[in-house]
Amino acid sequence: MAKTIIVAGYGPGISAAVAERFGKEDFAVALVARNAQRLAEGQKALAGRSIRAEAFPTDLAQPGAARAAVGKVRAKLGPISALHWNAYSNAAGDLLTADVGAIRDVLDIAVTSLIIVVQESLPDLRTQKGAVLVTNGGFAFYDPKVDEAGVKFKSMGLSAANAAKHKIVGMLAHRLRDDGVYIGEVVIRGVVKGSSWDSGNGDVEPSAVAAKFWELYSARKQTSVTL
Image (cartoon, rainbow, N blue to C red):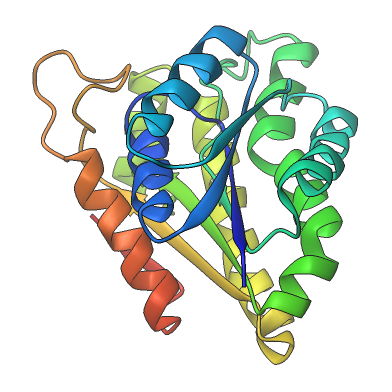
């Protein structure tokens, strides 16, 4: 059976590695993000590795656009077998000074659009016993030192969104278990090499994260793991 994975929030780093890892397992790859040029480059790179990939430029801060993207993917690549959510924003760094638009964007990208895309993909995911795979960060955890770091690094909006995303993963895992749909999350506690956070101190290889996602997808046992 042909399989398709949506990689939402595609860019260099984790999502590129996930696209390649699943593509090597005969998934067609739908690249979804706002930057059309980056998507085109990713599509070309994957094609060079004999992986079928299609680009779907989409502003994931707009839940309606995120929903529409699922229909476009289905029409071009077939039913959705897996969804990888890698989209996030580090806007609203200080919640006391951020404007309402920035706060909404952070939450819409990380949370609202994730839920909307799961809803829209759900008939396919149920039929195919598919999976939702979520990238998260260490700001997700409830811990005074983590909260202090979120303030220090001006990542208060991201911290709130990550915490909400972590809770959503846990709830969806319970909600969809009887439907045979797997939900898994990889929480990154370090700095991903080559990411926008990497100033030369990156200690997490994107390929290692992609391998962990494939392991979770294949085993379908753990809901959340930390790297």
